[in-house]
Amino acid sequence: MTTPPPRPERCDACGKPDALPTIYRPGGLEYLCPACTSRAALRDSAGAHLHALLWPAVETWAQHWHAAGLKPGDLAALLDLEGGYWHPLGALAREGGAEDAVREMLEPKRD
Ligand SMILES: [Zn+2]
Image (cartoon, rainbow, N blue to C red; front, side):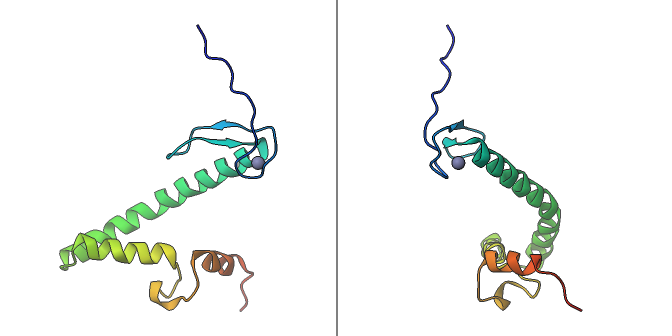
């Protein structure tokens, strides 16, 4: 006995009618059209890539400051702040959120 193929539904992201279930994301099932499936896969790949790049640096930072006396909760709070307010000058230097920081990073550099 085989499972019947899923029936297309409306896309959870854009509302187009040709969406199929997408189950590779943690936290649940989404119905996505082909275009939104591609965007979701690219976004997930970018997230995994960012995590792989940052993990060694964050791990070294956490070990250093834990050895200096900060508790894991203190480090976690700083890490949460930095993730939400990423900026080369540090978490406390930015008024806007991470989206503003990314837009600034993507602007052409002026010398
Ligand atoms: Zn869609």
